[in-house]
Image (cartoon, rainbow over all chains, first blue to last red; front, side):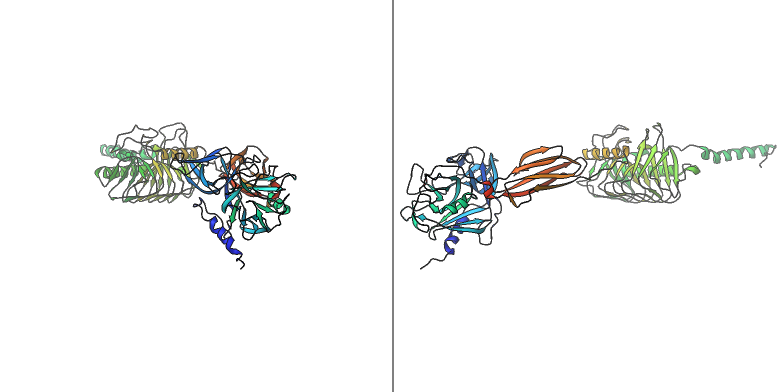
Length: 239
Length: 381
């Protein structure tokens, strides 16, 4: 029996609203997709804490630049508070393991911005939907992970976009995602990072379930994405 | 023509007539005699019926009422820097002294040339002396009183009926004229228009009303009626002989320690208005903020502020200052960053125009902005 098309999207949208209360009202389009996503651009390395306090447990250090392209780190913002210490804190999504984890960083040395883009990957439908201003603008057929090497589900974000040399597989572009494979702690010299990338050098047909955790798109599709999607853009991975 | 009798009886009669004539003629020939408020000098506001205040008025001097009893509206935010006398012996005595002073002022001889009836007091300069109105008096604009260097010069205005001032009118004192020596004897009631800057001792037979923002350097004294205040500053400390209920101040001091900062500021403003009665505040600054090109999304644009009387423009991107220009052209180039952003221009003006913050929102065309750099392919594939 064919699954109703809107169910995975609805699940994804419910997950979108599962985070902490946002500091300000977030505009939401008629279909329930947020119109914009607040983000912060890090101007220097930060330390992520479990709560909005310098006394709270340290989760990790967050570099101001991404490791692959040295682009500035851009993190989606889920909330903002004035801590008891008088500092302004922002609740952000963090890259790396465990996939989808969050933390609090000081708002100092950050720039507030926003993105109107949003990506929703629906594994069961083997599609990548692209929203702008809350409206669906493109839907691409994708190669999704095979059942033995699934991609993590949840709320993530694009860490960086990069061009891949023609000689390498997965070109011509890749959107490196903040999630990491639960199966591979290391893959091809990398940390098991999930990406939305091209099918360059790979032969599995679009619409199949054949990847090791990444999402593959046709070269034209990933090129279209790479010219529009930058760091901080939310990515929802739904079953 | 009268011819004195040479007889003894006739000489006595003649002498008596000379004395009588002397009694009649002497006042006509005399200069204006000094008006003395005596114990009423301590009061900045004294009424016969009630004193009613609205708003944060400031009274530097004593407040009193007699024989009436009502003092209304003198809790915070109003300030009375002096003693308050409601229907007590001090206020009653002050009323008696006020009546005396009022009558002395009303009896000042006035030459025909000083009969200002049916003319406006505004936009004229008067020397020391007594002036009269046989009916109502009107002040529209500035009235200048010139003491010609005589610190004791006395000005007396005998107004048979009402005194009314138009909004923003003023009494300007020149060449040593002292507000303590200016007396306004009003036969019925007086009304000071909004923001009128008044000076002198205002003595009304009936009531006195001060409209919003009017200020008085001197005194407001109503013999029988009410005094009504609305957000006024009144200061008698320049003439004070000491409060009747508090520590006496020094005569002629330009402000007792109790004078509040607000009163000082308003009095300074009044003094400034008196010095520059024609000075006006202009707010003619204009400005606009536009960008070129006008595309809804862009890879970059030039923001330009135009307008008149611009003093400085401070440009900010997402709240962070990026440029500050004190001379034109007031332009800034903004390289479009990914996402939605706001460019603001804070414009200040050379005149009193209120500063304005103008904003331009923009978002970059993604394909014009992003050019992903090369990177390794080591994802999970």
